[in-house]
Length: 278
Image (tube, rainbow, N blue to C red; front, side, top):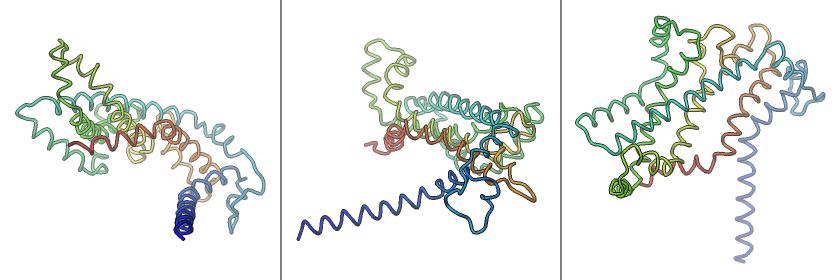
């Protein structure tokens, strides 16, 4: 009787998990299948799930006349630069806040929390005017600076929490052995905080890779557009090339999938590591 009950519970869990997985994956599966449909078939009513005629014409239009290579390169430059700068600056700031005491420390912590709670859309117009005055409008550098405003406070706060979990006895032992604070950070703290850096770096990458509002406002030419802005421009007033949009969505999703596939363990450990401080 007990054995039958265990089998029923296992079967029920498997069915529920399969239904949940199908519910989550169905939208992405629909996007992938639509990207392989001809334009006329993608707009038929009622829509069909499987393509009647498999074709890669949408991808040819995407990388041919629409020249999506430029947008992908721009997004990679902006996202990778945001990750590098925000983790480097945020890491140093977080280490200082975690390990050193100074009079203005509570004010700095409060300022970071205020930055985290500040709505991003309110910064769009000020950033637009600032970049015009600095003559950085319509450049990828303007986007990198804009993205730092919301990735840097989050990364600093997350890494500070992570550094707080690393025992200070390690610092004291290293000081006794003659290490400077610079050497302690690079040789002891940084290797131990690697999961935290990976988690926050992925957060910064995803924010920069998927961001649309700043990209739309701070760029105007084809040479500096990012991938989300280029995808948005595919929506036409009278007719929309849905196959091409779905192909663009698939291409835009691939880096995110690759990052999660190779970094999922470090991401989970990094996000939960700062939550178990005793």
